[in-house]
Each structure stands twice: as structure tokens, then as C-alpha cells.
Length: 288
Image (cartoon, rainbow, N blue to C red; front, side):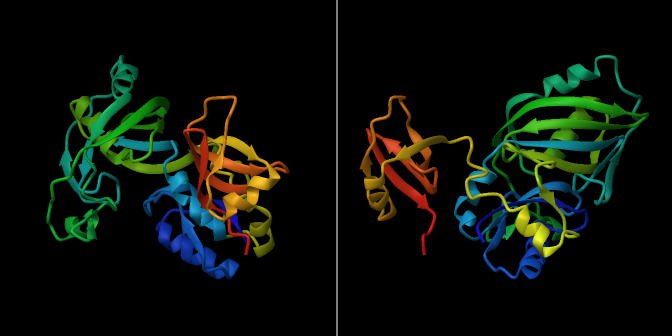
């Protein structure tokens, strides 16, 4: 079995625990996830199976869309409602120009990863050090918060829809929003709606699905590679590519960089790189 599943992750499980449950349910060892979701978070967790694990890093690099529940007036040590409250402030309500506060947070910017994150330093994830009371220096990362929409609000809570690049920490963004409003804020719910072209209503599955239902919902190995240009190669070049050899490739379009490789009969072979009129295979589907 090779391909991707769109798992609607439930709250309370780590991404790794979701993988363990699917391994048990499907009876397959070669399964991984693409892009970690915290136990608090729910929603779209791409799961790669078999040969699709070769393309998991490409899925991780895709843009994401989240629905975020926010409570204003408090801040926690973890950045979400599961942590201990460390700061409180009166929240006087949403300003008339609240939408401008959201717009001001859009765009390419540097973001410091929170201590409660999975980034490894000195061999352990940051949350390991945070739980020991050790706070380490973190290098800022460049992220792109493309769009923020206000979905709903009450007296001191709001629901936002956030479109962003890979590596964006929603908890850090929400804390910054709270401080910009001269208050504090923390995440009370987080649901991932989209990863690249994948979205939850596209054959998503859950742990309640039967074995056969899960099998029926497996997407092909190229399902998360639509951002890459598609190229077809001739029959005589297929064997060369499968043997790891580069071939001449003179595209009418000036394509450069990573591409999806297909046979003339639309059989997906894998990923290659076009440079100087040559196509060099990089990650190929095994034919064994």
C-alpha cells in the first residue's frame, strides 16, 4: 500500500500516537506523518504510507490554513490553554480598528519559536528543556502570515482563520496579537483545515473508519506534489531514469528545479530536477 491519508486528528493525541494507531489498524509499519500537530490541535494531519514516505518532506513544506480559537486577557507558559497562566490583564474589548491589528500582523516576518515546540537543541526538543525550567536562545525564523480573517468574536474570545507558510507558530502569533492590543492572549483551540491543496473534506478519515474504508481513502503518492511542474518522458528514457541516470530534457517552457516525472501513460515515477537541459532523478517510486 502506497499513498497518503488525510487524517482528521482528534484532540488529546500526539501526531506520533496517531501514527502508532494507524500502524496497528492497517498492519503496516512504513507509515509517518507530515507536519506535527500538538495534542491540543485537531484537523488535517497528512499521513504517508509505503513509498509515499519518500515525499513526506515536500508535504511538510506546504502552506497551511488554521482555524484558531483565542482567549484574550491571559497568557500561559505554553502559549495555549493547556499551560499554566503566567500573565493576566484586563481586556477592554475589541477596538473599532481590530481588523487593522490583524492586517498589521500579515506578511513576511521573523518569528522566534516558542520554548514549548518540537525543535531540537542539544539533542532534545525545546519542550524537554522548558519542562526542566531551562530556557534556551532560539534563532528567529522567517515565516509568511499570508492572511488573517475574523470568523467570530464574543466579549473576550475570537475565532480567526489564518493562512500561513510552513514553520509558523500560531501560539507565538496569538501572543503577539494580545500584546499589540495592550493585553494578553492565548490559544484555546486549533484546527488545521488545509495543507497545500489538501483539505479536510477531501476524503478525510478518522480512527472510527473501518479497515476497508481507510484503504479506499488512500490518495496516490503524487497527491501532495501538485505545486511541482509535471513532465512526461519517453518510453526509452524511463529505464534510464529508473536506473538513476540523467536524461536530456529540452522543455518548451523554461522549467527549472524540482519536477514530477511521469511516463507517457501517466504513471508517476517520482521527483527529479531539471537543470541545463538535463533531468536528474532525485526520489523515485520503487518498482520492486
